[in-house]
Image (cartoon, rainbow, N blue to C red):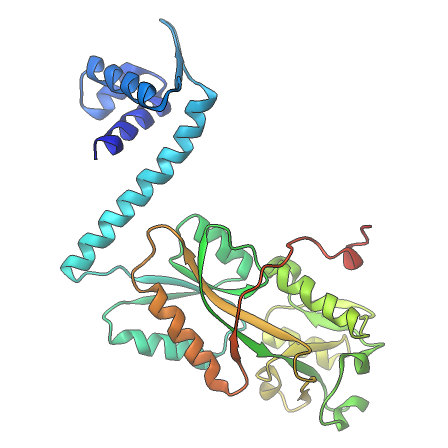
Length: 316
């Protein structure tokens, strides 16, 4: 506890850059504050401030400690808050990001399952990229991410793979077939979510298309399912989907691809430090619910490079 107090004193001085103002802010006299800072410097073996009679400035070591101290203090405050609320039976709402494409039945099952836990689940419709940012800022307790994705600083729950097929107009010559390959789509355009929404999945999807003989003549971006349907019906291209979009519109059909051709992977992620106590339970629940469609299956997370796809962006 004494180290945490020292860090609080250090942060006050680092933010004020004035020992007198920092002491006033902390409600202590200036001499004990100066002694605390000298002790901290001695303990760390590093000078944290450059100071003379006119100025106080952070050294490079001090700048590093300031960033780390703020993070440590925030984690400690969150941990103590969660422990206290758990002891009193007053858990915080569980703030969870979910992708816009998530099926309504999955959302309903999550909310229903946690009603019995007396914990309010606050679901927020967010892209994978938005979830990553909010998880880093601790504005989300967990996020249902589309892989591949950079998960540095996050813990991952079990992953589930869902095979996707092709959505195309009912009057298309390909609609008479019971299944399709990606090569069958040669000469057509593709309607897909914007890359900014889930860069890793976007790149992996287009790479798979090229590797299997489908080089879209054009790429049209669409997030909203209704907009996707409009683009498909207007002849802008085919779309990839789990089969739910086609159920909304009788003028389109959904056709499966060969097993293993194109899968979309989901898993719940949460901050590695001071997580909400119920996130692991939520992760298991989501996998069970998603697998309830009879086609999704458990998957192991594998690391993948996170860089723009050279073929799309024309880089060597």
